[in-house]
Image (cartoon, rainbow, N blue to C red; front, side, top):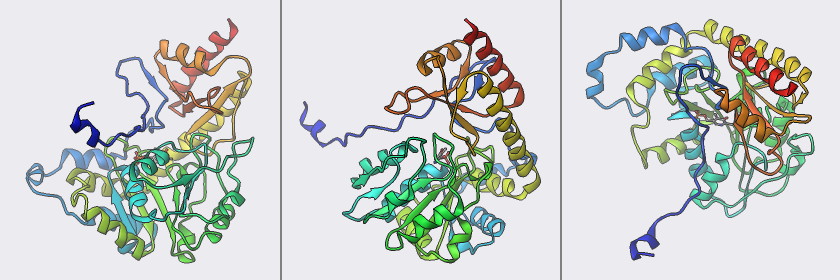
Length: 352
Ligand SMILES: *Cc1c(COP(=O)(O)O)cnc(C)c1O
């Protein structure tokens, strides 16, 4: 080993799903929205003031925090925005999880949590989901340095009711509790109303899933002004201009079109519910997803083989070669046409 190599920080990075390119490809592997962003976003993109790229964007991202504050009925001092919720969550780990006690998150959950904890040297423990992949609230009653979980959870798609979320927050009023609501718009009750009662709660959401803007990279957190101030202090100690000008303009534009947003989400929810009965008939079983994906196993066909066969046919789904997950596929809900192609392929494949 060279001397300088001794000073390199060694980390095991998060591995995102493939972003393959091709004509006939059906991409059901990274929980993107199959529908385009709201029409107003396209218009704003076409009409964008090119000269503004010359200047730095607003470091306070007011165009976006303002429209989110209005939409969710909170103060502008209660909103923090970042480069996707990954950026918001990483910043929140850095800001709020500074205890010597372990941060708690489920053993089966968004795998980035572990990566950030390792990167920032944050101690953590991972209470196991039960045999049905459910989060057990009581596992989070013990002393800890903070709590984070997605609701609905990923990759299971299982939703906690608002009473169960509140129960976890109620038992953890001495630490910051983060609820990662990346998929909440697909059928759950947001924890946002709890903000009135719990100043230690931070709710994180994203434009990547329900708002069809994964490519733009916009995420946000809503919480008590003192939490938001702390997040901003850390952000300004790291990079003042996390949000580029187009994302501020286009993000704000997207928030304006409530009707389009509700429509798109409703279409995906319909397709998801139909997918449940189609997949069940094909011999799959799965937790009852309230997100835009289904985490399914087949009664006879091993997931790893199905994954490869689907990929061969240019249908991409997500496979996790991990204990407890190795016989499951996470299938993003696409358009009805894409899902039909999936079912047809599976029908043929499983007949063999
Ligand atoms: C997709 C996802 C995110 C991150 O999404 P961004 O694209 O970074 O906004 C965060 N948490 C969970 C659970 C997710 O599935």
